Structure formats: structure tokens, C-alpha cells
Amino acid sequence: MEEYEIAVIGGGPAGIMAAIAASQNSSSVILLEKNPSLGRKLLITGGGRCNITNSKPIKKLLNSYSQKNFLKHSFYSLTNEDLLSLFDLEFITEEDNRVFPKSGKSSDILEGLSEHLKDVSISYNFEVTSISDDFVINDKLKAEKIIITTGGITYPQTGCDIKNYSLTSQPLTDIKYGLVPLITKKDLSDIAGVTLYDVVISYKKSKVTGNVLFSHVGLTGPGIINLSNEISEGISYNLLENEPEIDLEIAIDLCPELSRDDLASKFNKDFQAKGKTMIKNYLKLFLTNSFIEYFLKETKIEPETQLSRINKKSKNRLIEKLKHFAFEITGFNDKLSKVTIGGVDLKNINPKTMESKLTPNLYFAGETLDLHGPTGGYNLKIAFSTGFLAGLSASEK
Image 1: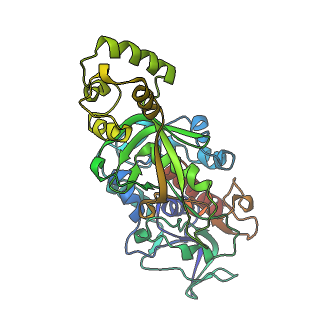
Image 2 (image 1 turned 60 degrees about the vertical axis):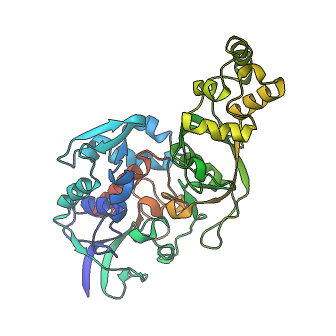
């Protein structure tokens, strides 16, 4: 039976980084990957461009996570500067502090990481199905320490599998979909592809500012994706046991820069001064052109109606729809869920080492933990930083 000091299970971003860090102090590290190649999920992140991290200063970055106290040590152990210095690449920072390789190729990131794995043994097509109490894996190899980085439940084609949660007896929180598009009750095929920019989306007391993209089956785009975490966390379900039942309403403020009173005042003034203007043309001041026809259909006003012919009741309806355009949500488009909410309970993990408090020499990193953030490089940051800390801690102990 082969024996290693450290075995890393899972060849995604967290696993690769854990193996890199572990090999700095240990000459006996093996990385076990169930696929024939590493980093399958990494290759599809950021639309294939790899939004490798978010460039906010660490303190501001940590404030973007509900688990910021747990993440603090790992984020300082591997800063953005440390991460990017691993690559012989140029990086660019785009809107909302999103960092990408200048080449626009996620494959360049994977190739750069792979160059640091020269001292790591890699076993491909190795699906871990059992881990004994004395750290024998699949009755084939034994390790002194194990780092589990098997991910969550999203994108099963990349190797993620709900069965991975049963590899250990580590307590889990509820497993849920995260950063997931929403399915609407209404068919939105007529406006599929239309984007609303910088609107405010609300659900109960939660509000998110961002873009909304209409698809054939519902709503997506950064604003919706980020709000979906709040929605998912607010619903009682656990994918280890059942699927979510969803029947709720979200609303979009299409004109967040103006209050209802501001709109009423502007309408009263403009409807008099521009009485012959058709409402479909006037609304170009507030809405994306390709959305106006659908908006007026829902507001029950003919597009060619002149402003002077719109009565007070219709005017109030326009204001209400601009400030509160509601959609009934009936489900998650779970095949497009980007992250998993929930996982190994953080209460039983040492945030300074990523080691289990219940099982010595067992470490966890990345999405397999109950860690998640918004879209925009935040989740890869978790994977790389926690993976690095787990690998470093396991090799130093």
C-alpha cells in the first residue's frame, strides 16, 4: 500500500492550491482527482475567462461575507498580491473590482497553477469512495493527513457530487443552491436577452443593486444572482433530503434614482409640456428601449398613447410599475447554480489552520465548507485562500 504524508482529495481551485502549499514543506503529497484532468470547474468560471479574485482591500473584501470572522486568517495568509504573483501573467481589473487574466483565458490560470505542482504526485480518474478511521483511502493508499476539497453540489459534470458529503462524519449545515437564476411564473420569451442596468431588486427586507437579464424561463444577471443567496437561505430545505418549494415575489425598482414623489412631479410637468409625445418614446428617459413595449403591456397602456391623453389613474399606475415591477418566482434554475450554500459546519473547523476540531489531521477547504460569497471573484478567493492555509497548516504541523 502506498503511503503519503498528505493526501488532497479534489483537484479544483482549493485542492490545487492546498497541494501547492503542502508541497512547500512536504515531499510526500498526492492529489487525488476523479476526472481525467484538473480544474474542470475553474475552466468555466467567469464565462471561461476566470474571475480569479476581487481586488477590494482585504478589510472591505471580508465585509462582503457573512462568514468574515472565519475567513480573516486565511485571507491574510494568501493575499491577492500573493495569489497573482504565482502567475507569469498580466491581469486586468474590470467593473466591481473583478480581476481577470488579460488573455481572457481561464486555461492560462490552470496552466500557471499546474506549474507549481511539479513536486506533487497526481492520481487522475481516482474517485474517493471511502476513508477509514486510520486514513486509508479506498483501501489503496494511506496518508498521515488528509485535506478534503471536493466542492459542493453545483455543476456535477465537473466532479461535484452530493455523495462527497458522506466521506466523513463531519457535521453539516443544510445544503442549498447559491448564486442561482430564478424561474418566473410568467413566460418571458418575448424579452429574453433584454438587460436592465443598475436597478434595485428587493425581496422582503433584502435589496440588491445590479443588472437584471431576462431569459426564456426567468431572471438572471448579477443582481438576481446575488439576491438568490438571500432567497435560498430564507427557504427551509436541505438538498441532502429534499428539493425547495418556491412561491414568492420579488420586485424591481426600475428607476431607483427617483422617488415616487419625484416621478409624480416630473410626470405632471412633462405631460403638460410634451403632451403630443407618445408614451413609448417618453419612457426612453427611464427604461431600456427593448423593455418598453413589455412594460407598457404589463401597465395596460397603449404604446402610441400621447402623454396629454394619460389620465391620473394611468399615471399613478406608471409610477407604481416603475418603482415596483413585480415577478412571481416559482423555482431555481438549479442547473445553473454557481455555488453551494452550506457544507461542513464551521463551528467544528479551526479557522487558523482549516483542521477539524473533531478529527485531528483532517482538513477542509473551499466550497465543501459552509462558505460562500457574492458573484465577482469572491468565491474563488475563498477557494484559493482556504486551500492555501489548509495545505500550509497540514505540512507545518
